[in-house]
View 1 (cartoon, rainbow, N blue to C red):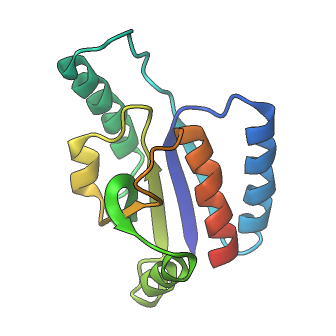
View 2 (cartoon, rainbow, N blue to C red):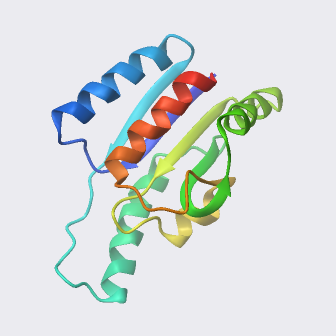
Length: 149
């Protein structure tokens, strides 16, 4: 099994990098694991909806270039289905049992994901109706992966 996390932005704080390294080590013992970091686009102060859409499209295009046609894509999106840890684990098991053992989790930037990325996703997953910083979301996802595979 291979799991990839494709995320907009880099981790900047050392405590987040430490957490990422910790979970990466745990996950890598159980499967092939990689992280694709896509540079985030600068966001001007008080951007118009059109500017926000353009930024999401540019980030989305960069994300989509990293996805291969055979990969099973799970987009982290606030409007996605929620799951407890057991259901999260079951989703991974179901993917493997259905020969979808190359899974990509996508985390958008500060503005979220483009429509193109959401259309490409095989499913949408929400960790909560609350909004979390995308850098912290990466750590939360990796923590769940470390206990689910």
